[in-house]
Image (tube, rainbow, N blue to C red; front, top):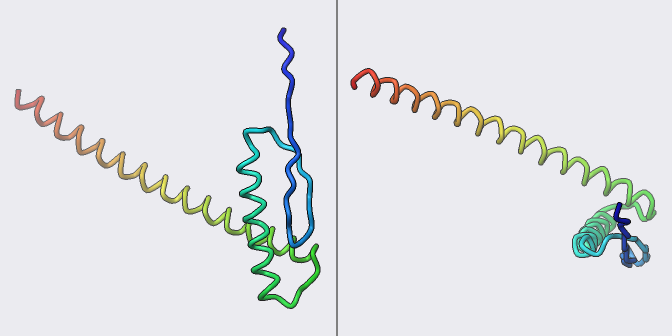
Length: 106
């Protein structure tokens, strides 16, 4: 059995003037950095429009907002997938009807 060696690198993320070191696989680095920048941006926006200055509270509120957004997007995707399935079923039914009519004519 071949032994697989996992290589991880440490990435520094800055969130509201605080630095956090996070380990990740090299191929995940870019998306992790992008996620950190997105989180920092959201934290700064919330801090600017909120009376809350506590880092922990800002993190919790931002996490709740991001989770709400994620769940809303998932719901939208599920709704779109259901609509697409209905349209495909309708097209399949129309195609079968046309093919049946053609077969009867032949």
